[in-house]
Amino acid sequence: MKILYVENDKNLIACIDKHCSKSIHEVILIENIKDALLFLKESNEIELIITEVNHLELDILSYLKEIRKLKKDIPIIITTDSDIQVSLEEFSQLNILSVLKKPFNFEKLRSLIEKLDEKKKDSHIKQEIRELKLFMELFKEFSFYSETDLEGKIVDISDSFCDLVGFKKDELIGKKHSILKHPMEDNTKYKEIWKNLLEGKNWIGELRCLDKLGNDIWYKTIIFPKKNENKKIIGYGAKRQDITEKKYLELLSITNDLTGLYNKRFFKQTMENEKNRSKREKKNLVFIMIDVDNFKKFNDLYGHLKGDEVLKQIAEILKINSRRTNDFAFRLGGEEFAIITSNLSLSKIIKYTEKIRKDVLNKKIEHLKNENIGFVTVSIGVFNYKSEMNYGCEEIYKFADIALYEAKNSGRNKVVIY
Image (cartoon, rainbow, N blue to C red; front, top):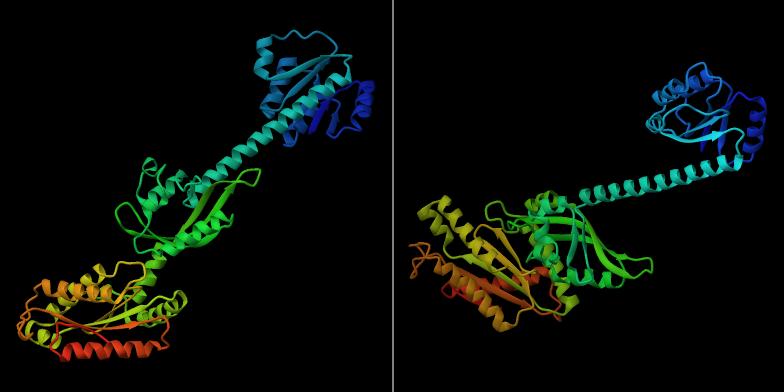
């Protein structure tokens, strides 16, 4: 602590100097009040003022008021060799810490300084705690923060995250994060998250979620165990970075403008990834090719704008029928579409593809040049790639294309499995 000591008694100054030489505090001794007031004007580091009030050129109150003008909150200890005729109310207004009658015991002064020092330390600690709490609040707000208990129920959530997902805080507290889960998100991610957390590890990755209105939200997140002083896990915390715009731009680069389905560029990448996953997980991959029957004739008869509307309607049917996590629907070009799915038995493949064919037919979109039917139909070719096979992506494509050709050649509006 930096202390200003104002005293003009030479003997007392020597005594003060002796007592303060071993002090952990820095003591600045000044002999007259004019120099003291001048010093206080120029210094911002003083934390305690000890001053005599005898032989003053000003009266005591005027002197103390001058100090208070310069230093509003610094504690003051007065030393005097005579009784002071000042009311308690006036002393209270000036915030005088103590009055010491000379000669006084230096231990008493030391005790006052130590108490003040402890109070100052407590004040600093409280201030640090307040600042830490403020920092944590800001941290939570700027990081879309949430906390859960051991069962995964939300116990705390930032206003910023509530705003992001469109829920009120009381609509989320006590609920699980599954209220925000996207039906297309990979379930293996959530298994991996819980595996890491239960082992006391963090999980970092990207998650696709839904807001209250059903809009897609993407965020990069870190989820971490919260532990007590005994290293026991007492809950889980998560902070997030909103990457929805970035993901939207990525999606634009891999989707077809007209239909909103994935494009041919993304098809090549996905086929390779899914084939490798099929090998790794020992599950079959099902590649389905879909082609609109007599589509050139449709365009010639109804025009290309009507043709585009047909392609959009078929795309919506494919989207509805490819909502599982590992389902992907593509427009490969023109009137040709494809679906990559997995882990289906032969009977389920037949049921799945027949549903797509019937959904298109049941739309009853007029197509008078589609012989014997009069409505828009599709032909479908399928290749069931089993994990033990060793075909490349081009061969898988070729086999499905052969099946599609056979479906068209044998009358159209059919499903053929290679």
